[in-house]
Length: 376
Image (cartoon, rainbow, N blue to C red):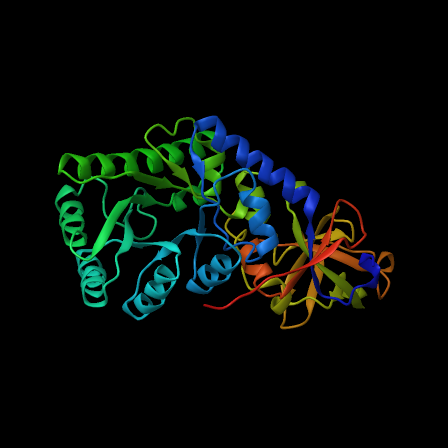
């Protein structure tokens, strides 16, 4: 099969670009001497996970317990569930633990630590945990210099659970568009996690794991002293948000949605395609960046950008393609049936709309169909 044989919309994965993206991140981790613990939430695919972990011990990060189930069944044993734990998920986590999965939880409050420890005591299971650190005021976490709270959480975990260390996510880096800014965010992330670990050790607690991660900080970090592992995910595919930050080139984006032209509005300078927000997602992550890519950047079927054509607006199953500046468009260049590939703002969100990848390897031949999954 070739691209022209597919029904549209279809999610296309260019394995050649994916391998290049993986090689770049692998080199960054090895340059800093840290273990890579890839985040599998972007791919949600066993084949993608195997490509991301090749050459590493196989430790992974997930964002749902369903991911933990699927990847554990596929042979991954060391799994970090990198979303704050809720009480209604503890039985699920305990089941995975009893089955032999080394499932590590994260939490950022004394209340959560006491909850996890009490569950462990009552159910005869020891659940390991990392304390989440707020290194850049981005989202959740304990302040790295809040030694009292860190010690209180660590103390609570000693009876019924197990403190493994600390983790942080440099999400604030997504607001920076310069190399210096990204490097500065990487240092905020590193130094915050390391200070938190030092505070725990000074209070008498072992802190073997110091885990950091975001794709922008990982690729622009100049120093990861004190860090033990790097958690990153979107790098495997990249997307237009990453390109807008200067983290990758548009040409590095490995996934896109194949769509067909199904109509024209010549007077408006618009094409209509069969990929709306159900195929692309509603993510508008480039809206606040220097270049607004609408609902996605429009390329030819092979993935080469067609100037400034974007999906300017979207309905459930219809995408409206127009020039970014609203200027005239020669719609005769795109007869009904023309295949286009739309690159996503956020590859995680767009891929989540689809059940499988149609895999190419730098050309238009379909070399495989890889299943992906969603849900919690």
